[in-house]
Length: 88
Image 1 (cartoon, rainbow, N blue to C red):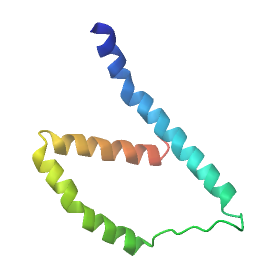
Image 2: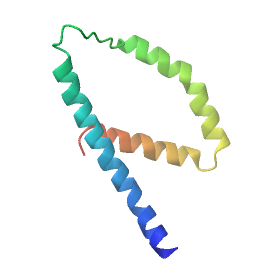
Image 3: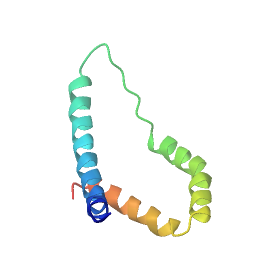
């Protein structure tokens, strides 16, 4: 049990490293693929992204209400994602 608990404590750091690497590779591959003539890309406009966010917000709100400590965990996840996106 001691080993398992010590290993578990390392998972968030490992997950973060995987996320940073995934984002890096995604951007590298996107830049390599964009010039290819047989590929096309669709990037939603800011207004569309906001409309999607608003449509999905009730799902997030329900999860926050139904899970004890949900707000704290959600805020921590959002903060971690913001740090990753800023390269921290």
